[in-house]
Length: 326
Image (cartoon, rainbow, N blue to C red; front, side, top):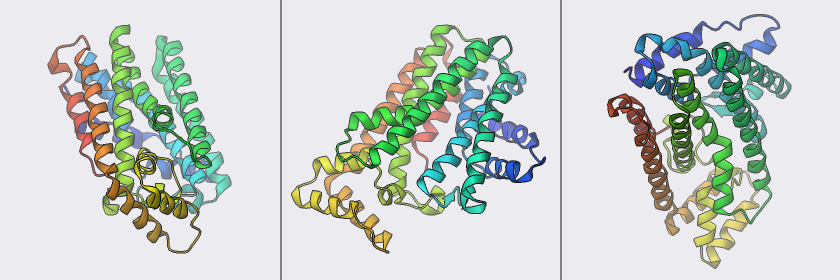
């Protein structure tokens, strides 16, 4: 079995070989910029690890077209997400709408969506109806999740259950689809593919909750984004929802006041809201739920009908995501 590091290196080389340096440059240069800005390559690695469970190491390159399709689609969503959130930094670099302009970000993002489908079609072969079916359902779910996320910004009554469903759609389903597509391309049974989808979905919930946690408590020098962005945007995250639920009357009043803050000292808002998070113990609550979802993910992986040694690398890589700093 190949390690995640070996797969990452091989996939990075493959991704770098994709040449989008053609006219009109103002369409393709932002795409190359986004794809060359690094990132964890989490989704393509998960896809390749799942594929490798069923295929020999020497065949790993045969799943890279699909892995690239998933990675390109993921970066398309980030490009448009940054535009909608008015974010200025992604992975320590200026976002596309800041480096170029908003119209360029929209059009280049649309181009990435088409390129993602092109890569998936190249990979699918005689499994094209199944692969594109997974992709279509997944991509639609992600758009639905993004809409819920935007809707939540103007609501004050978002529940934890609604939030979990939103991140399942916006984040988890793409991780789940990545694992399932890798398994399907590798020849997994329908039962195994379904179990691996469920594994990826629960892993995705743990991953997004961890991302929310890092947005407040992470190290900005390694996180790649400004700490406290969710607080400044009044995002209804798991931590905010539960902090408000557990807050006393005075703390609720304080959270309401900062939600309406329009001053020129954003750090004061981040510090004040984080102080309330600390006071009510929401960090520990989030950490416990992350561990719970991760345990459920591992349980699904254990049920896959393969010898344990075929699951070792996927399990190890998944565990590394739980203890990340970015």
